[in-house]
Length: 153
Image 1 (cartoon, rainbow, N blue to C red):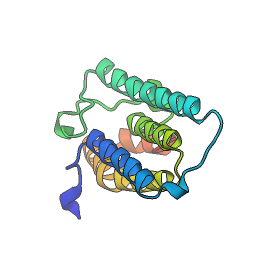
Image 2 (spheres, helix red, strand yellow):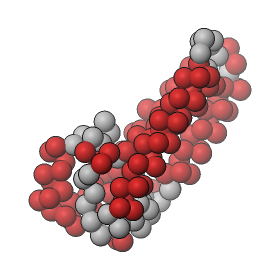
Image 3 (tube, rainbow, N blue to C red):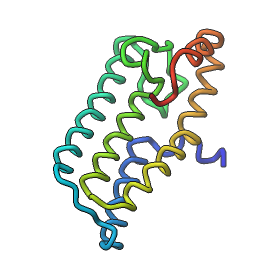
């Protein structure tokens, strides 16, 4: 399955997952639920997710390296400051929070089932290949970072 590694851009993965969430919410309407304040909570999660992603990109720009996961050969420095002190993947955490907000907005049980699928896919086909490249490129400095900071949160 190496052929899938780093092939589908994360934003495309989010769009596909969000569309699938919407689709299952329409196909099986009986699994819809109601929760007071779900729209406000969904918006809040989306804003936090967007903020996490923006902070991640800003740290990459500050370090003058690329945030593009499709251009790993252009990574010029190991970013460990700012939000990267708390998560090795704040942009991906942000995407998960946006999808969590979307699932909450849809208020459908099956939409939530797709979140772990997204996380597992991202981990296997995006994050793990990125980690292998970072370890090759930054060696002991990256290994030290791995020991201090969690992959997600």
